[in-house]
Figure: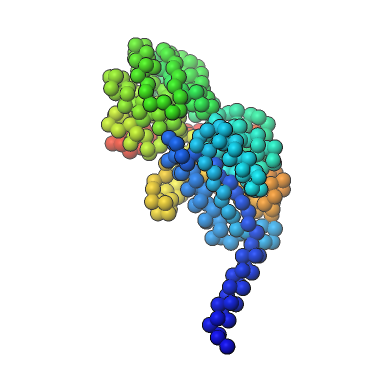
Length: 377
């Protein structure tokens, strides 16, 4: 008898038995992994991958069965139509939950598909208030919304930056227009003056016409509602036109990539942006460890949202563990009342699915590097 062959056969049978004893739980992730903000979408996807790998290494049991989590990652290219197609694909694949989407413009239309299918959805980055105002019990987010973010930036522009004439540009997306609207409200509420408002789109590369028009109004601060892929070239063209003024934006521009996209057009301290989220002093060490772990695994720095994707994934699984079930109908009630201590802070949702006491972090850029200014709530 060939004992070596018998040993191999026994080992194979044991491995098959172990695999068979595992329950596979599919989790979806959707973000733009192609297009102008693919670097942000990949950042999100990697945050989910890191969480899934760690969860599988823990050997979690749910309902008395060993569980293996499987990530189904979809690309929505930041396009609403592609976003809804990706959502339907995940629903058809019988995912237990979805982390995403990245943009408000894709998250909002996709949320109805998840709601109708009873699939819980946690967005790590969609900030338009409309997302959680639809009455969908399946919709959650782990970052502050535009009302908080745009409002904080608007007040800061008037009271701290002492801007006396402010111009606003937005990209007409659900996110860009939403955050710009909230910024404008806060500026006016704080007694500030808006000298012009112009529009572009999220794929534009030429802003000379709108910038020239705004230059004539002599603003001392320009706010842009949109993403870094457009903000970088916009800063370049502002410099070419001699518009050396303060530049502000929300979390969409607040990436480590912005400095590369703007090149030498960004002066130290010129740009101020806010990230929807942020860690207080007690969480700083944990966030630093997360960033180191992320870089070691993927060979790249965290852009913006990866820690929130990681926390959203962990929060969803924590709800499954509390319910002792990966059935959406059974763990959804636990998700709505969860209290999870994440890398980014305490995650507790209000009745709409918004995070309670969502933090915001203000940043600027010096020497091409992003620097934290302060965390506000």
